[in-house]
Image (cartoon, rainbow, N blue to C red; front, side, top):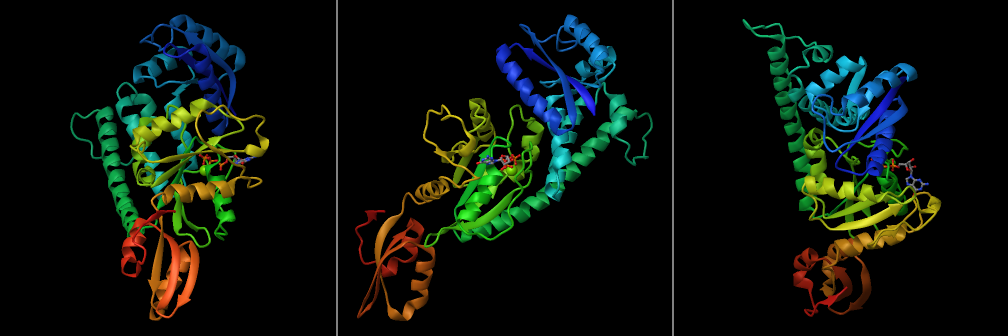
Length: 419
Ligand SMILES: Nc1nc2c(ncn2[C@@H]2O[C@H](COP(=O)(O)OP(=O)(O)OP(=O)(O)O)[C@@H](O)[C@H]2O)c(=O)[nH]1
Ligand SMILES: [Mg+2]
């Protein structure tokens, strides 16, 4: 097992914030099987260009490396290629930064072809600007089959060109997958089934919530993977759920967020995250037992970055049955347990409330020879009252605006009442 020292520089944030960030970094390292032996925080007014931290601190870390038998030093922020090189030379151990760590976890977890491509794209985009001055360390990771060496070309130029080619190849492959995704989304739109996406910090309980909603709504599909692990979910899973006598909705589970998520990742996960951007409603899932308000802020920041901040949001806290107190959240939320199913019913009602705010109670008259219309309405809507008369079946039912348009020929009561 590799042993590491974690290093944070506190210059924009408080020492406490930097320390919290290092605790999270420890979890990230742990996810890769790297053991944290110690954490170092330096308070400074600015970054030291040569080593990122001050040279006195570098010497201190050098001593710790010898004493603690350290293999890796992990920095909480993104280092420049030159800083990595200088630190490597001075400390004689592997130097990595937070982005590299997160990218490595994603690479380890990726399973589907799409996720593998997305992660690989992010890693290559991360590497590209770091090629300069990293000739040596890159050749460790490169090793492709390019032998068409032009005259006078250096290894570096070749590596660079190879990387650029690979990046454009992966982008094209992802485009293809994206267009298939677009088609299935169009199909969904055509059926006008609203989409609800689960978003939130990694390990908050999104996949577990998808499973408890599926259980509650008697959806007999395979449960999705829920696991006490950072970034358990990398692929998008969609399920069509429906409460009895209610219209269906599509529920989407996708990748979790973390603070300082590398931009390369956000960019390469664009097509996966586009499901989130297209959703009609977001369920922002927050860990209610190990509550940390920073995780709410982080999720919001990522949502803004991917352009999903305009979508309506429902705040849901999980792990109610083990929470020791009511978390200090200054807005409305639903506190659920995926273990005991407490308040899952409340959440379902809230989802319907949000999706169908514009629903109205309508009175329809359906002629007897149109039985199939009546069956369809019964299947997808809340029927409040049914009366059989000479000229047909009278149905009092809650309709969406689209359905009202669809059934306008059967409408009796033109004065809409709010559902
Ligand atoms: N006690 C308790 N544990 C829960 C609850 N909800 C989720 N968990 C646990 O929390 C851990 C993380 O749950 P996941 O559903 O995998 O979390 P996620 O948000 O999908 O995480 P990523 O896919 O990694 O982003 C798992 O060990 C779950 O069993 C809950 O209501 N109560
Ligand atoms: Mg998950």
